[in-house]
Length: 318
Image 1 (spheres, rainbow, N blue to C red):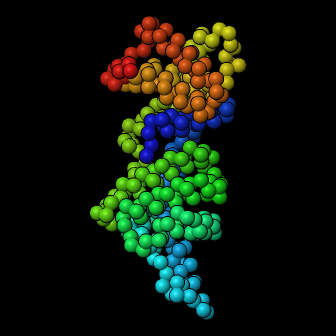
Image 2 (cartoon, rainbow, N blue to C red):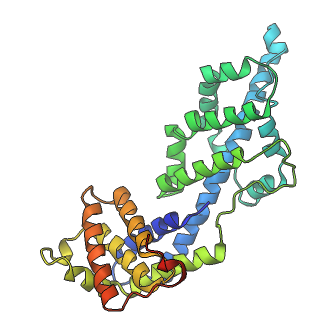
Image 3 (cartoon, one colour):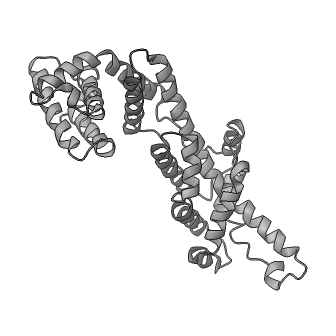
């Protein structure tokens, strides 16, 4: 699930909070909060996957209610069960790893089920649903495509759901996007041969030891050398007082300097590109050009002084 860019985002958010908290801020406390925040992403991911099972249960309840009417119609008594028999939902419903994860993390929609019912009503009335249900035969690929479509079109963009997740995470927008992409990826990788004992969930980390080391090192190194980095930035911004540079831009440049100087295996171009991308999302439109110019000047100055020493993958300059 997590990639290096996302880890950089989490470190950036924590650094911003840390520097805004003043001199009494405790590094370990903020570091622990990063990992708590990252762990919450997995909860969001499981919540989104679980909606698929919830939608089926809601559909089953509606069918039972209609069957028990005083004067049920023929359609009420013999309903179209194509969605109920969706083969992909069956895989999720029977998967041991998924069921164990939602039980261990206490993931359920019991407090917000009315919101899911509203979303299901919208889905059930849609042309997408009617088209899917027009053929009563279940086809695995069609079942999969339909689930992905309703998640993208009716769940992920739903304001009610977004509000609920916003309450669960202050950085919900970034977390929610990653959880949504991971949900679709999980469903897409399922096949008719997927067994109940198979591991279908994406791991939170690609390489937990490597990723956590990178996160901690980037966070701590940026804080440890912040004053030094500030002076370096000031040396290339003669027309600006350092205090006039936006806090966000300053933090992004300090993180980039930490990578340039203390992460020998990360190529310079990768570092520059990553922080330019972050500036597009978190700073002003002109920040990208400003940050790129300052970092470029600093890189060549530090390189000529012999302070930047790259090794392994870090030697790649493309």
